[in-house]
Length: 495
Image (cartoon, rainbow, N blue to C red; front, side, top):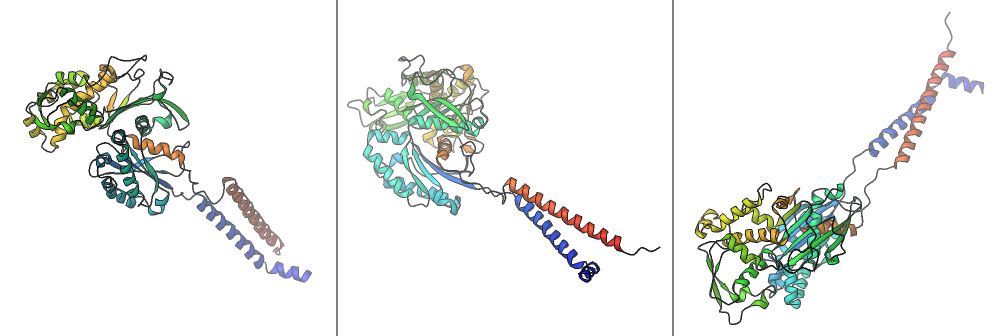
């Protein structure tokens, strides 16, 4: 035994090598775990596709959001928009298969832009608004045929198609409100919200939170949301037939009650003239019951360009007298007192942008002067000034400007002071203002949150591992140091 002990003391290298190897392994393990534990995690994204089937056109929106959710509400942002060529799907009532065919090009774009591995789990929705509401009222079988054609086309793509349906006016208004406030970060931060004003071709919506409204006076106008841990009781109302295009039909119907062969319309420019068929004018459910008996085939629609007279005619399509509630907007519809700022989008923005009136610092009196001057401009001169604008749209801006002012001030009761609190918006932070983002945002609550990538070790396990390795390394250092000093102390001393 003494001989073996003496041999080990004379040859310490095997033990030293073992200690060094263990030390290297400990150091490598510590470095490897630390690097893996602190590597940046790859972000997982989910995608959603919403088709906005409006009265005049259809648009496809692609949204993405992190798989992890904030307070059960996914952080959604718009990544792509595709405008479908042609009119809205309600226009294909007599040829429903064309409604589905019209969507194919934009759907192919979506298939390319959404990562292939996410196709099967990406929800696809189609929401139809006022155009299909009117078609459904007029001819429900035609409406059903259009939806069947649309669904057949959408089922051919590898997405998780959730169906096509008609949104109620209340939903359209409420989701537009969500969009405006979400993009402005007001929901996440719990700030005072902004009202939403939406003007489409066949309907118009107003939505806002009022401290004076608890939903009891008119429950049908109340919508409740829970977003980012906060509850919102929202007033919202949609006026079918009061979108820009249908309001134009109401205006012309009001002026053709006696079946004239010519009308002089103050809402169109001096020198404007066009033949309009009575059957085409009265083909909408908004005016079909007003068609005069014995009307000729067409009438000559001419313009006089008088803004004040135009406002008087526009007012005639509203009912401002009847109200059974404490406060009303028009046509006997309840509306609480206006409160806060408002975002006005869709046709509100496009019309006021054309007239250079989107600046909120422009007072209401000046807005009226600008529109009045534009309406009085001769039609030939208007066409020369705007050669790139389609004649159909160009002719309607005088009416549209007068209609918007009348709707806002006489209909919704905006005053000279509160009008300056309206912001005309097209996009917010790169996303289009409208109902589709709010719709997608709300629907993410029904999509299960995907578990995020996690580090190799939980935090407690990581700390424990580092501690054990550090202690082991410390022990190895102590053992090595002790053996070194012991060998030094046993060497013969030179006297």
